[in-house]
Image (cartoon, rainbow, N blue to C red; front, side, top):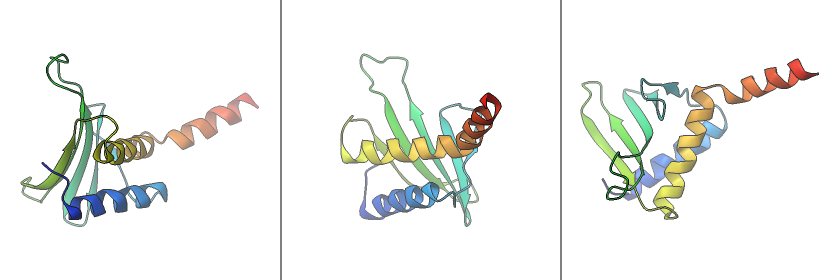
Length: 114
């Protein structure tokens, strides 16, 4: 899955809205994969570390699925430092922080330490 122009716009928009807490990311059964329902679609962002790390690089993957769970589009980034990697890495971190309520947890922890 390549980064076409619309996927780039989608990733950038999801990141911007995630920074504003306007996307409700959720955990999945995989600890490194998060999902959000947007309109009639489910967006999934994940980080994968293949078992054969010598031959298969780590990668980020974005998938957009419809209500029938059909893959609509997506993107994969497996080259560290590329624009695609940086985009998906940032979105993954924003999704992780949202799904795990990291800011709330840290606020509670700081309050408990006062």
